[in-house]
Image 1 (cartoon, helix red, strand yellow):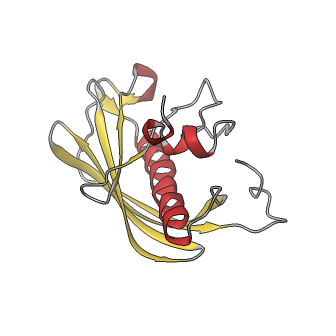
Image 2: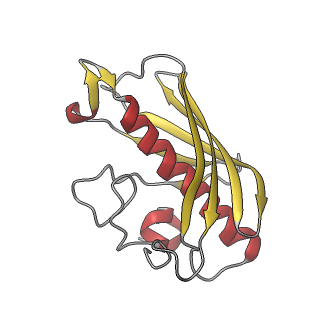
Length: 158
C-alpha cells in the first residue's frame, strides 16, 4: 500500500501497542485515522463488536472515550507533523480530555469519528471531535494533546 493510503498509525507508529490505536495490539481497538484533505479533518470509520457494548445494541461509554482519546491524539500529531514539517511523529500524550455523551451510540453499525484541531502551537494542540452513528452525532469531545520530551515515559513509544 502506498504511504499516502496508510493510516496515520500505520505510517508513523507501526509498532505502537496502544489499546485504542496501536497497530501492534491484536487485542485492541486498532483504529485507523486518515487526513481528509477536503475538510481538513482527520477521519476514522470503525466497526464495534459485541464486546464493546455497554448493553445490548449500545456502545460502551469507556470505549467511546478510548476512540476519541486516540483519534484526537492522532489529529494533533498530524497537525504537528504538517505544521512543523517533521520527519517523524512526535510522541504525544493527553493533557486534558472531556467527553460529552449526547445520545446512545448504536453498536451494530460502523461509526465515524471526525477530529479537527482548533488551536495549536509547536508542541500542543486542542482538538474537537465528534462521533457519528446512523447519521447522528452521538458524542463529542475536546482534548488537549502535548508532545513530550526525552525523559518522559511515553517519549519512545512510537
